[in-house]
Image 1 (cartoon, rainbow, N blue to C red):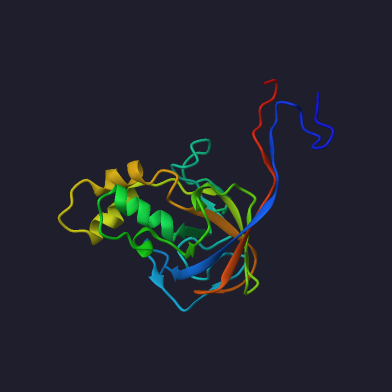
Image 2: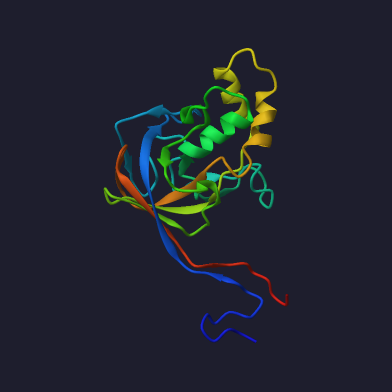
Length: 206
């Protein structure tokens, strides 16, 4: 049977679409395609390929360890053009790792947002609409990896094991990845609205 109002089977619970507001705290980019860590900039110019000249720019990318269903190095669509982190979640990761600070540039952030609750749990298909006109479509959360942990270790001398500690402590706090749906420029201080689509858990036959 289905609910006549939602059109969903009775076992599917619907969460309505909503909007949440936040603020851009910082924008950053890599200095070249070989760089992992990013550098703060005054403005982030987005085109359909992503950030021009950035490490993760391009319509396509090569698959890696995150895509075990493809042979490593398979060319695929690039849904990971932009890395988006949260001020609040960075502070929580730093606390969990017993660090005085965790700077977003250490782990390759492009956009740091303040005020969007549980940013890393924002669902796929969400649109981040920036006041300057740019729109980023969210693909999903960004799983923490040892590469980011090693970058943190480079900036925190004297601490052993940070490369392994980061994936443990940053799970579901490491931010989001997405791609450019509408080009434009993004600056620190501008407002951003998350347009979160309606959601349901796929539970056939439950």
